[in-house]
Amino acid sequence: MLAEEPQKASFSMKGKFYGFIEVGEERGDNVCASGLTLLKMRTSLSKSHKKKVTITVSEEEILVSFHESEQKLQHPIEDISFVWIDPTDPYSWGLISKTNDHCLDHSTNPIFYAYKMEKKALKIVQPLYALHVIRFKDRNQDDCKEGKLIEIEGERVDDDLTKVFTH
Image (cartoon, rainbow, N blue to C red; front, side, top):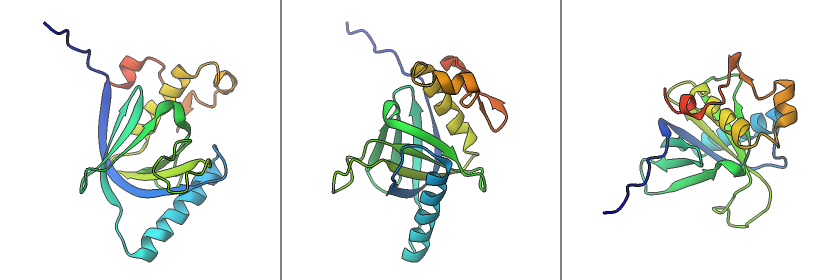
């Protein structure tokens, strides 16, 4: 008899995908704000619509599944360098990732991905911050001491993953 593999903790949310754009830095509010502005302009000028997606967050990755196609985007947690909520729209958020396998020129520049959720982005961003605090404690030790990663929009980030993945 084969042993069943333990089920991994995860949760999913529906939203829309603005797109992705190459950026010059791995971190920063201004980088993300500029990236989102450019992606919104590109969508508006091309008269196209944001693509509907389901975003699944687990301890290992963020998996983005597109509704109209079989296409999927994977963002391994260790490749995500920055997560951001749009201060002007609590439903929009983005991340900067080091992986860019889907880019044709295979550039080494980081990529900004932007999303708009059906529910407030805090519900997806807060667990991502918690994952980074837990998985990269050594790397984030200075940020944690300064309280940068401990609170998001005034809400404390819990570092117990069993609480993070049970809503």
